[in-house]
Image (cartoon, rainbow, N blue to C red):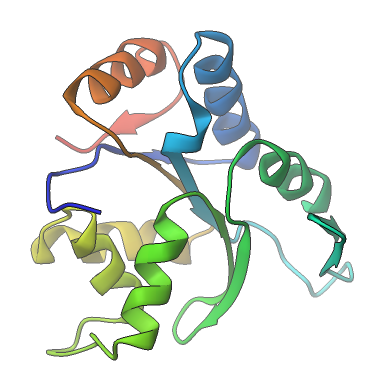
Length: 167
């Protein structure tokens, strides 16, 4: 990861996030350059679980079908329990940034492990709270990794989606 600013998009629902990823895939965008982070489910009413079968991660309950589909497209699926957020599912290159923050004890100055990982992909310290808050209220954050051309292509494709981009 570099400290160049990766564009981040916030989606209100998992349906909107999935639609955006599908739009990017149909446009020829390399979906391995995408990360998705979110919780967006409530386990009070439905059991929720994740397990592996060989090289595939399976999920059930709430939005299990959604995460199962996303994990089929994006690389490095993971589920973490993060203090203040609860259970957070994610996939893509961002997982490595979070693991690095957790393993390296980068959490300093009141920044959470998630905040440290966001800063690793170029989010400013002032903007970290914005994305953490979005996740707390069950929104989804899509991160576009890659070069300037990748960011521009993703922006063009997502212009007509229900996402908003943090400038």
